[in-house]
Length: 336
Image 1 (cartoon, rainbow, N blue to C red):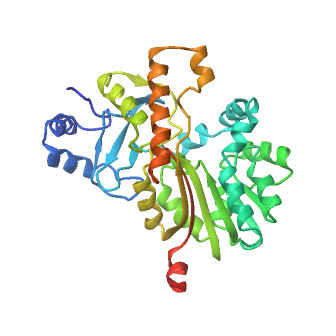
Image 2: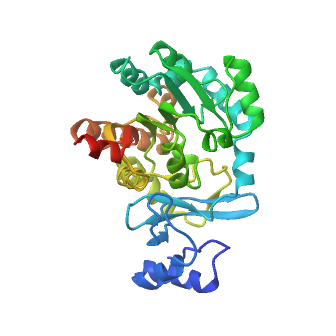
């Protein structure tokens, strides 16, 4: 099988890629060692994978590398700060607002775990709540107020912060204002944020400095690298059609597994105190969508997803979505 590496890689790296899939594993890993590290655990033990689709973006080719240490996937080469700012401008927010405006219940359902956790701990979590990467019209603000927490928000670009202030009446903070400021928060929430970060380790380490002594960091998002039947079928199709690429922008620059998430949090001096792993329909069509577009592809994915849902009921850590609550590791050790 011919699987070509990124254009940024040397001809030697390309030869090693071919050898890797025919068994010469050590040579390939030595070549990658000089290029990049895993987003989740900083391991250099990574290799490009043909089981994730190649992305053509901004005139370059991007590919995912799988970490042999934590099993997470990282996009290579990493996006620049300028590219990230452009990706998450008001155009991106507007598209997402339009997407969930017709399905508000489905959008708000993404925050059910947050609402349940805050409600069950009402009055014990402190007074301040930060949604880090909240978007232009965050549902989390309403949930925080309902549970006696004062909401604050952060967004990368000024245009999105302006839209959010118009929608909520709350002035959002910039990343620099939070990271370089001295304000502390009792609850920091990252709702579907970590998969967008090109350097999640540094970002989480900064954020832990903004947690109060007894504060909690809550994160939720997709486990797009999880070993599920649906992911296996999609990965097999990518492998069989490895010469094809997608031009869809790389909004998700990392694909997490539960193991890679645990490695990431440990790397940032955080320990999970509560977690939920479960299965969701996304991105497979619902039953109604299947009836509207009854293709072999949709039928296979729909059936596979139903099997995954059954497995998720049988096995505790099986699924493609996570919700975790973390505390600073030194605080947990001090209490034990």
